[in-house]
Length: 85
Image (cartoon, rainbow, N blue to C red; front, side, top):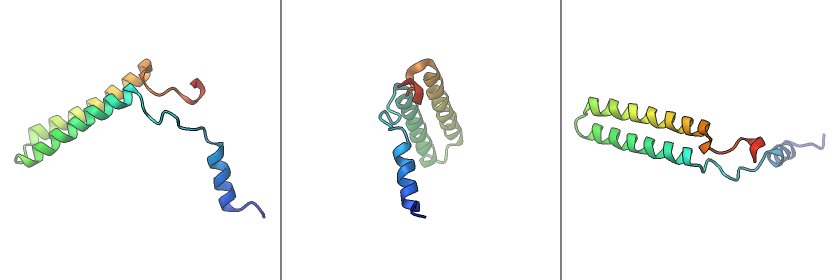
């Protein structure tokens, strides 16, 4: 048993493809920006009262941001799949 757990982990890590882009794409940046705005609006809503209408609007904006990122990814503005490098 000369194949230790550390050797197995090192082998698995070396076999993985490098993550050169690491989510750095227009789709990811757009989604993150929209969700960041949503969380900011939600935080302001909680400080102001809480203002539940504004809070739920911020939740809707966050969902819209996630959907926007996914749609942009499907349109080709995301990080390419492993086979597409």
